[in-house]
Length: 113
Image (cartoon, rainbow, N blue to C red):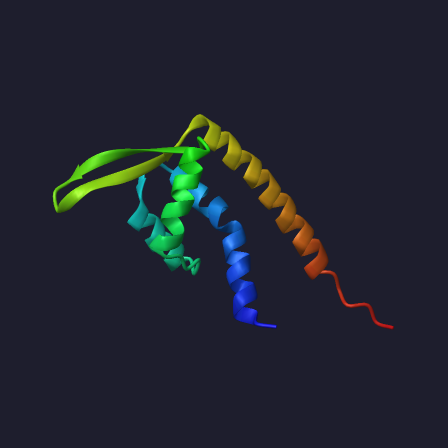
């Protein structure tokens, strides 16, 4: 079994949650999201991020606006919709339950026979 493949799958599983959390703090540019995710070792490339952002927008969870840039083309800044905020709240509740359940399992002492 390939450990790297399993680690990538684990990161993919929480990527949407992390992206919504980043956007929930206020208007954010995609490159800034990539920088934050990379700094947190949630390695992601544009080819992964942009389709996910499009899917989240089409689901009504986020919106964007174009902002003129002094150093190049206009930039797309993302924000959560009200529906996106509610969705993130539900994901946060699920995340907290999963962390608690995982800790319950992984921190249980080994039984001595």
